[in-house]
Length: 113
Length: 114
Image 1: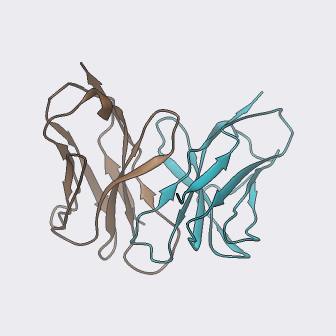
Image 2: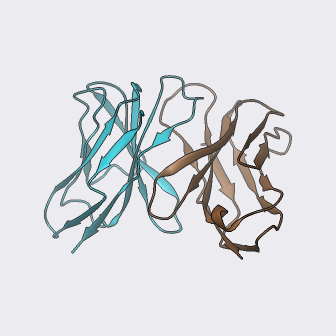
């Protein structure tokens, strides 16, 4: 079955370290997204990519970086510049036409210790 | 810009009660509207959608009607079950231009008691 795989499900990081969250999709979707979810704040867009080798900042891109070298992969790096990185991170993808439903991965919970 | 407002939770109901979760939106043009559901520790799953005014989306006993005149997309279910306990998100994608994904409400935590 097609879907989005995020790994790992739980991740612990020491302060000052960079960490990379994996996101892979086999849906042949053109667009991919990263969201951050915090209690009581819903989902906020970090970065998105509509095509390979191109990506755009979302609402809260500071302290994060991404790459899109392959259509099926969109890894997110949480850098040491991110002031409050503990959160639940969700990767998503959608076909070229945005009116179609967006598909989400199962998420990665990042905790800074 | 676009925005989605949904009722704050938690909403606590008894099993077999009638459910309404309100959602209103602000957008230019004619957005597509969605309801997503999130079970504990998981990602979001598309529950239903509507792409034009007066469309009714439905799935698993849930329904929502796209009301352009009131800019609303309220989620309803006639008889809820304990297994419906989850967080529900209303979302939209703008009608034209741009491609920055969905705009979400803050989510409504639904708790169904047996």
